[in-house]
Length: 229
Image 1 (spheres, helix red, strand yellow):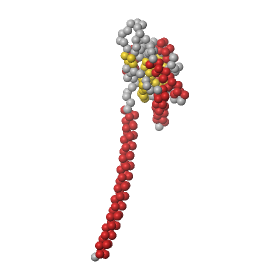
Image 2: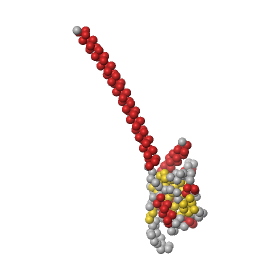
Image 3: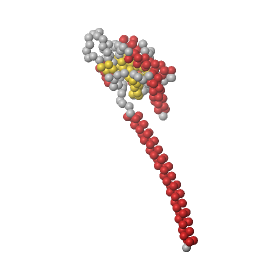
Image 4: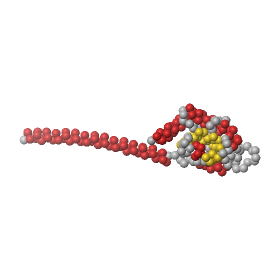
């Protein structure tokens, strides 16, 4: 009787040890599986989120425009003249006392640094004060900032339409006497556009030239890396 009991206990011990080992092994396997699956799902979620940002993350800003090139008085078709190039747009006016000159100086600095890095960028100035900013005035004005800067003007309806497409706020007195001085209130941003004419990013007044260049380099590399795929 005692021998039978010892045998039973031995069998129970062996059974429990094997069960525990099997249980622990199965549990560890399941834990590893669930961790792996969780990481896989999280990675897929992140990739999906990135694609969503690429597709929907940027607002609809900009678009094709047709204005007058102050350099030659000819119509300037952005699709034809700027297609295949990164370009940066700034809306301002030639009578601006300080902010516009400061921002255009900054734009010129960004363009020069980008050129040194062999990542060309076209600077574009669009007047938001066409009543005073004639072709000749804009032509001379942009020369003070950079030889590559393109100065554009047009009639008030044309300028208003382009400004609206870029979501630029512009406000000027509705009626002024001939020769009367006035200021134009407007948004203060650079708009970076890619070679397909699509909006990439915008930079506020407090963004330094170095920060703009750093941001532009990233977009430049990303765009041309995608062209290789």
